Image (cartoon, rainbow, N blue to C red; front, side, top):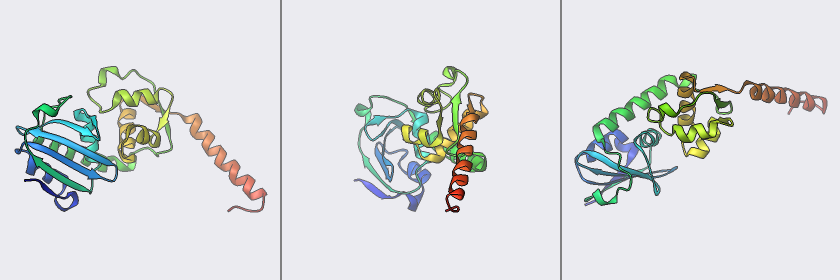
Amino acid sequence: MAIFGRIEDLGLAEVLAFVAQRPGRLTLRDASGTLSLLIGGGRVRCAFLGLDPLDAGSLILRLASIRDGEFEFAPGATDDACPRRIEIPVDRLILELTKLQDELEHHRPRLPNPAIRFRLVRDPSALTSAIPLLAQTAELLEKGANARELSERLGLPLDQARYLLFRLRLMGLVEEIRGARRAQGAGSVLGRLLRALAGGTR
């Protein structure tokens, strides 16, 4: 028998804990899409965002962005439906999820402005397992990108993209493109000046 409800009524950690020891498919739907977790033996065997399989790090990032929406759990065997196994225990997933949410809230005042552009300054290949989506992020940052662009291209909530850039900057993998920031600032000052000369600011 399927179990369903609102995520905000129970909280995501409670939903995960409730289905942890039940084999089946947990589907989470919110405004940004559908996330499916195939569970068996107390582990998330594999996960999909839409039809795309996720690794463990990407799954945790996606889960951390969910605040409300609907969940549905359909019991049943899932072993044959996993093209890319991640095999992460549900209790560990809950701990990692809680840790990420706490870190995000703690560092929120220090997260970069969504418009500030960063570029890659070090080879991140040795750290691909340490930071989710690092390979895809590094590719975008080779030419420079800001949090809004990362959010759009990687399918992440904006705050998650800001937090990703924050972590990469702390590790010395990216640096701010200061020239672009100055140019944006100069452009806005010039724009205000031109508007003033044309008859006052609006």
